[in-house]
Amino acid sequence: TYALLLAGLGLMGVMAKRRNDKQNT
View 1 (cartoon, rainbow, N blue to C red):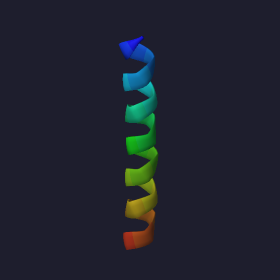
View 2 (cartoon, helix red, strand yellow):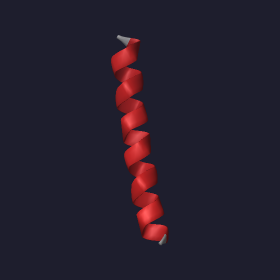
View 3 (cartoon, rainbow, N blue to C red):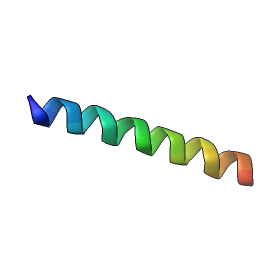
């Protein structure tokens, strides 16, 4: 279903952004 795919993609994006923010600090 689209919901599952979207949720997974969003989660990955959030995790990636968090990692990037941590590295920038």
